[in-house]
Image (cartoon, rainbow, N blue to C red; front, side, top):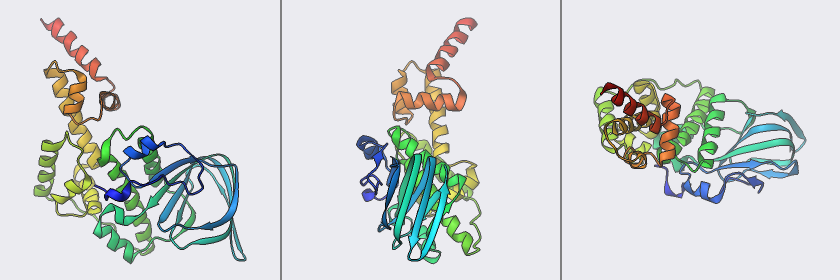
Amino acid sequence: MLQPHARVAPVNPLEERNLLGPDALSRWAGLPIGWVEAVPDLSGSCETADNTLLAMIDCGRAQAEFHYGSRRFSYELGAGAIGLFTPGGHADVSRWRCDGVRRIMLQFDQARLGDPVLSEQLARMPLRSEREFHDADLAGVLRAMVYEAAAGSPNGALYAESLSLGVAMRLQRRSASRYSTLRERGRLSVAQAERVRELVKTRFAHDLSIGELAEVTGFSKTQFVRLFKHSFACTPHEYILNVRLQEAQTRILNSALPLAVIAEEAGFSSQSHMTTAFVRAWGVTPGGLRRGMARQTQHGS
């Protein structure tokens, strides 16, 4: 689980209209994020905050201009353009002209992830400021974060933590590529994978964290996520979601328990969350599955 102090005020340094309300932010358990509607025109000096800031154009178009003494940089930015701003940066003048822009912002503080291996890697290969770059995978993770937060975080702390670690891993890979380092490869051992399966089997109904899963393997969180994906061909969240779906399906087909009770017993945050997961996985609602089983039973009798 992320460090407790990770839940802070929304990331909104320009105090633009935030699309994530206080209730949504209070439920979000990942790295601090903001999702804002950009003001049409903005100018002034720009000082980087104490922590690394990621800013991405979610939609719309923007013209940006930065002045560093006598140097000037101009950019035409569209959806998916990402900026990475590390502590200590300063622009004498920053001008923005925005047309229908929504911005996703994330405060990246590696200490909040509680992963000493990641911290050591970034200490050796520190992040560098980039005013514009494109990374489709990172953009997808950032969008998934704000969509999850806006929905009230129905997938729980593990999903928020997984997404936050996903950002960290993308940034670490980006930094490592500058130093020509090799990507970590390998798999969990048979015994380690079995310990993970057993933990999920006994605690699938609880809000498991990446830290708990990583602990039984002896790896750091970022190492665990990489090795887990190589071993199981899916993310930890996807694996646990599939276990919950299978458990819910068994209860639906073999009991008369109300669907809301089954959702809770299977680890879903609500009946609605379970229904959404069923439709995405199998194209049928839990109620539809139960009715279909009842019809088959009637025809067979």
